[in-house]
Image (cartoon, helix red, strand yellow):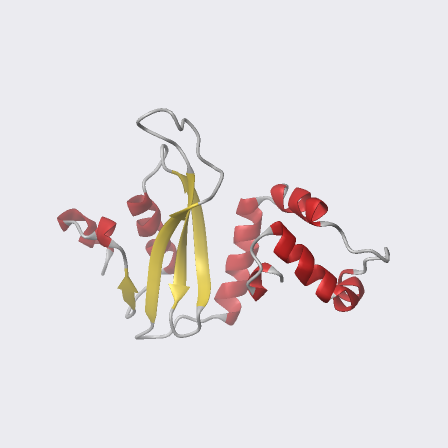
Length: 155
């Protein structure tokens, strides 16, 4: 809820939790009088199974955020902070997240994480478009996807 409210750092999520502690304690059935610290929040977030969370999120998004004909969607990948490996080599590895974002509602519909050493963003985008079965929508992509052979996955 903190992230969905624009709080992205652990301390910001902690501030959100403290500001909304009455509602959170009731809704989450927290029995302690004191809310968890940002350190505890970090530990919990670090242990979240991303693939399972992504499945649950997609199920929610596909139920409550329908993709309408003529809708404008943005698809883009961003590297995730603090995931860089092999920083001293010419071919570094890091984790990136590709998101499908709806302009009309300002919401993310689907995400997919990947390691750049194992798979390319182009392949991940192709898979997302195929899984979402996108038809009769406008998709904006960055220059990475502007190649002669990349148009085959855009119908």
